[in-house]
Length: 338
Image 1 (cartoon, helix red, strand yellow):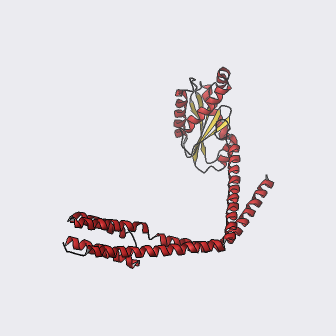
Image 2 (spheres, one colour):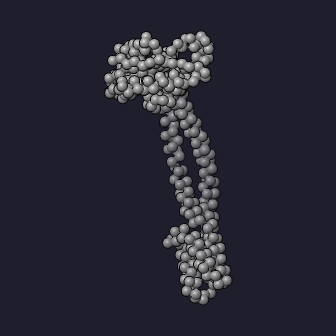
Image 3 (spheres, helix red, strand yellow):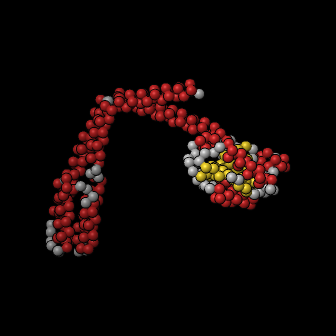
């Protein structure tokens, strides 16, 4: 076991060193890539595609104005203005000129002032064309910049791609080790049939039990051997699995159920007194008694023991005696012993 652990640590160390080397190698190219990406983002922030909406609704406003429908004209101008206001117009002269032109048109229509709308439309077209040309030139520069970058670094890019694949494989290997470790741990601490925790897990859990008042419930399926003899072991296995699911669904999420052996189980209730534990056990007893196990009715006997801080061998013996007392008194009942 120690040799396996040492090998795992050695592999982890190699992976860590290799990852640091790869990251250091990639850092040189990271800055150039960032510069190009930031440049691309700054260009795309112009959202040039929306400028045709500004032109469209402005032209519609002029059309409505010519029909002497000033209300619709004002409405279309407001829509046109709303599109231009989505940009950061403070940093661009053409954007500001477009906004001023729209506002001036709106004021003229509201005040019934005659104005040369053809000249306004012409000016709007010129402003938008200037923005279009500027955007086109920037995109061409960006495209050329990327082409030059790719040409100069084509071999480095191939190396980066290979390194990314290697890093991905290393990550998968680490995750696989972690997953396998989790699987082995779960298999070591769980009961294969019922998917509850096993006795080994119980003793590991109680080592870490915090100080305080806790309770244990031990229960045993009444006449389980008779059920196996009558209906077969497959039905017996079904009842064991079904009863565990029934218990899990009716206890708190932090309460744990352990298969102690055969048809015997223990429930660990943290920060629960014996009186409360008795109520929980009684409720579980009634649930089992009333549950339909595919046409089979079963009952269970329960024992309860309160624990102060740590669980000792005497506590487990007293718990077992509490369960035995329930069987002696006729089964299908709960008894508490101190």
